[in-house]
Length: 321
Image (cartoon, rainbow, N blue to C red):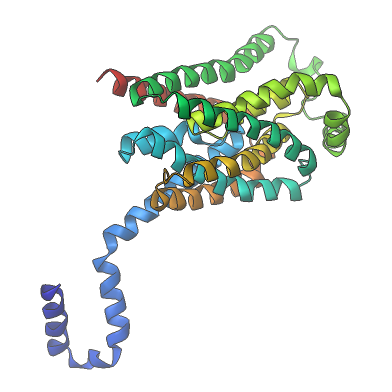
């Protein structure tokens, strides 16, 4: 600190006219002195924005990327990594959910009901793994298995679509991909979200165990649960992918409230990392919410698959190293 002060005084002796601009010069100097810190947090924001953008487009919370990131690059233990992950996910899900609701892609009342089911799974997970702790190596192994299943789940529809496209009729003989009828059906489906879920008890009974499992895994793995929520909306409720990701994001927001409280009460969150990455994710997820309908779903899925495969390989190396 003494060297810095001597340098500053020497600068004023050489350039006496700078005396009138001392406050401004001192502000710039302090900024340069803390440049490493500024760049570090700027990188966290950019990193969070990228994760939030991709995660929201894919209808997942982003925990599948955040937990390995916190463990391997920031050397957090597995419990703190999970707690920090759910806080970042919560921050991103807040703005994304508000955006989806304003765009009328999701009914918050129904999402609240499904979110409560997911919270029930998280509560059970809290009790189970409080009684039976899991060490870091075992956790990473389970996490890698889970990510591998997610990759298979994401890749199957693309593979089926490729085979169907290969064996399909010529392009001219097919119906247009974006017909007015299809768009009307999507809008009416979202407008009748409450009727389709609350009043179709058979469909709801099929979905309840899946959303419960989503909550169970979200607490245990430190994820949002969107990797389960989105396929449920697509396969069980027959929602188009962009509306399915909107409903998934709303449930992630609701469930993450409990997860943040559960980890935070035990001091298992690194707030410095989680908040800055969470701010970046909020920006990225908001942008994704606005542009999700303009981006082809297969492009989204392929990018997610590539990142997940990289994460699985890296995590596997860490397990056996």
